[in-house]
Length: 115
Image (cartoon, rainbow, N blue to C red; front, side):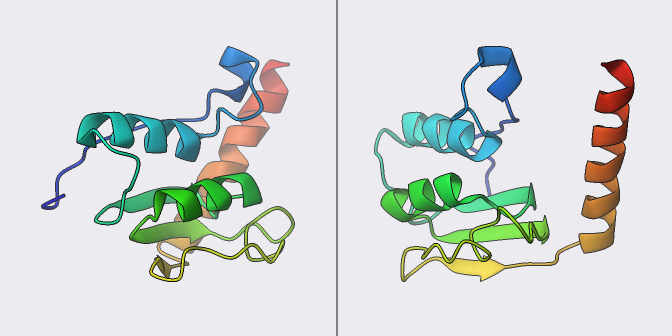
């Protein structure tokens, strides 16, 4: 979309008590609403962690143009679960991998300390 941010989102699973409220799902909904259509062929999704199988499946149906992510999810990521993306979706992985991994580790350490 001409290098323009059309949607931003974060994980709302706990807030909404909804297992489908991943950041990617929220971003797809906001982007589709902004564009007025369900296909995101000219859009790029930037995420800290490799999308899970649900989010990868949604990106397939949205025909997402590109996914860029930092840290891999070796157990729940779409690669580990052998989920196929749309044939036209490009993937760039490992962008700022160390920084993304550290950010996620710090988040979960803080989350555990609050509970």
